[in-house]
Length: 191
Image (tube, rainbow, N blue to C red; front, side):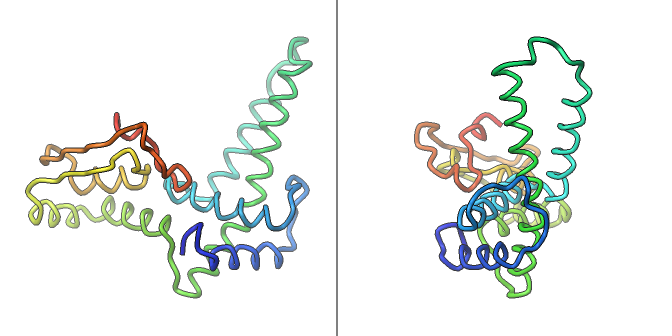
């Protein structure tokens, strides 16, 4: 399954329609919320972030802002921008149970999507160094093409498999980066 796959949208829509938890910070129509669930799932997978961490970050950010002294210049547009940023984080945090329900639904149906594959591969390569050792024996030299379309999870995977001085050449063009929707970043060219 993937973002362009209608089955993902159907599954996310089912999860959204069945959800009875708090949604006071989420102000969009159910169809948009389903899209946000898919996007957030992909972002979290692509960056190897546990969904619960998103809730913690939103809470920590709000606590830090609340702890700031009230400064007169915090009124006006800047203050509104801070409130808007906090509102976005609060809404994303409220989507976490939906992301978890979406992941649970996929798991119960034994379905994985691209984000799941990249996340699982990265975690396996990091947690089991023998996987990388086997791949390094199998491939004496590695050429990575279209490297500008590599996500953080893929970068972690590649480092675990072929890091530490293994002969690797990565080729990419930052002007051709087209997979940002699935977590890819031309920034990996310099990582």
